[in-house]
Length: 315
Image (cartoon, rainbow, N blue to C red; front, side, top):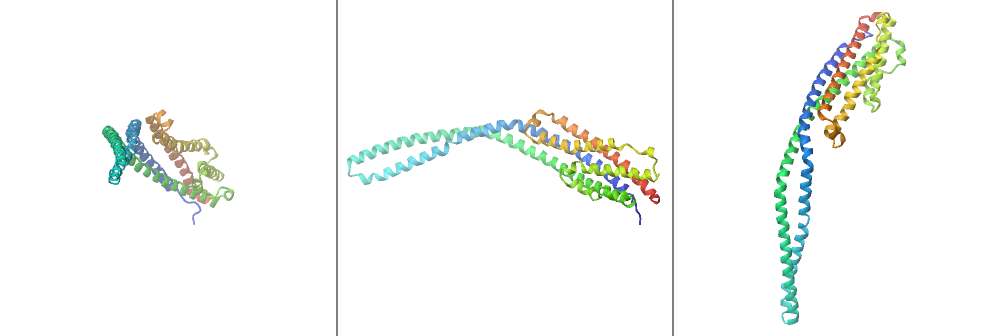
């Protein structure tokens, strides 16, 4: 049974996935900029739409009260008219009732006039509001369509990224198992299962995947030099390389994600103060550097893994 497995194919698969992820990320950013074009116009026109809508509501507000007053005086007039027959023999009561009917008719006429004026004002305001509403709704429809296209490519990018993380974790797990099979001191090192748990635990996943791989890289080089498979002079100073790689991961994947969300989908200072195109270009550049660094890191470790597999007998 082999003690050391050659896991370079998994490393190459992670490299290929990185390139594909980068391509889809760039496409998603392009569609994000397309969304941003219509969204900026929509956001710019939103105050005009909201102001017009608010004004329409203020004009419509008295309508219910006006209608209620007309209904009230119409009902009162009807009641008074029906009461005429009951007081027909009492001239004094008839006179008082007629005066009340006349006042009610006059008030009803005034209330109907006010209602008609309100209805006309509402009709005029609606006529002015409808083009504004139609234009704004058209902007909303275009924005939602553009956002939907962006979301499709974003979803594919995230799905591929999760697949890549899984492949990376399996690759790290198998490489860690290799060391445990041939290096007794690795029993006290980080357990291979942390190749997976390091990505899952919130907050901890900001540092643990780096710490795990850094330890794996160091111990692999130590094992190779300890067995004279690799000259001591060939040991690389990987601290800067791995630190830079993980720093680019945090910048490109974590920090830029938050900046993109606040810039393109927020309504705060970042939306108005940051240049959206510059943010998109910066995100692409950071992702390119991150992917390049990860490809380099994988390639360097694959060489170490192949050395171990080719020289399994000395372990």
